[in-house]
Image (tube, rainbow, N blue to C red; front, side, top):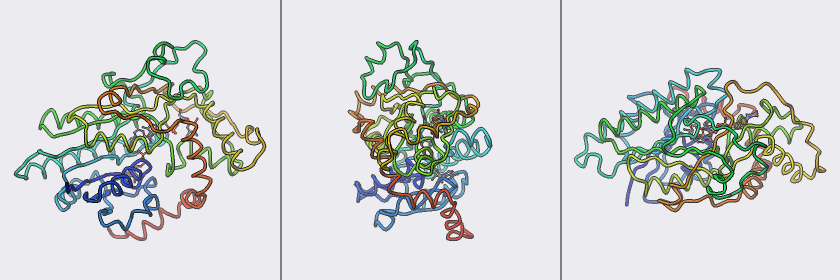
Length: 377
Ligand code: NAD
Ligand code: DAU
């Protein structure tokens, strides 16, 4: 079946994996990648598919309603996978307004433009979908209920039952929203707008909330790529607080596979949580990264341990995120394909093998290049 799919934020980390998957897997679909190319957007992430006949890139700001109207009608868009966002918690603490503008007003502009265009079609909302990609951070923070804290690794692929027997709690699709950071507050607000467009106008929408992603092409402000790069250069590893916060890590290609499955088979107006049942205390994860980088660089064990530097904690630092993704597993049969040990090895190798990609990002060269290339547009 021919379809015209708009993917927003496709030049970013997760978006680039989703664009690549859709362009390669669905030659009959026309994939339009819409991205503002902020500091986090990098078209180099998509070099391998940029000349594909079913792929178009458009540089635009999702908060520009007229532009969203024009692009959606010009490309006769019938499905939207919305990933464009400001995504880094630390930046949201310094500059909350940019997060409200992009994540809230941008999502609203996209919803409105989709509604207006689909309202003009004879078939109306039949066969249309607005799929919004959100985060587990909207649910707030969980406590560490195990008295000694979570052993390392707590859970590579343990079952939900085993977790519960351990006394730990999880975010489910019905957990009440309780965001703490400006980033998660802006994402929660955008989720509410998406659901409001369904409940008020009947727009076919869907929301998924995913845990921390890791893998190739992640911007090196986030923990894993930042630390891999710092270890390589012998630079300090800034561990916030005591390093005891816990995150649930999922390999980015498994998230992209889930998005593909949910886009095609998910129930309209529904919500699905996506996570790996793979919780790590930050400091334990950091030790795994150090060991892996040192081994792959041929350094003796323990070589980079001294780089660990405890620094002032992130303001309002959420203690623990943990997703219960059993609904997605039971209803649509999705499960993570990679064990964490394989995923982290693959990831560290990728960053070590793509030092030029990292150097261009850390020098800011790619941003200057896009500003020149898209001057006046
Ligand atoms: P990212 O920061 O790597 O990429 C975001 C992309 O959005 C960039 O290409 C950027 O240029 C683009 N963008 C930003 N503002 C824009 C605007 N105003 N108009 C158009 N494009 C704009 O983010 P990511 O980590 O790939 O996250 C993608 C989505 O997934 C986000 O919505 C995020 O909230 C969500 N999410 C991320 C994670 C994670 O662990 N990274 C987990 C769960 C959910
Ligand atoms: O849970 C999903 C979320 O995961 C996404 O919605 C966000 O877009 C994504 O950025 C991520 O948020 P986190 O804040 O969890 O990711 P980050 O990589 O920034 O930090 C991971 C943990 O590591 C967190 O507890 C803070 C800590 N940290 C982070 C950095 C950058 C450090 O200790 N030192 C650091 O330098």
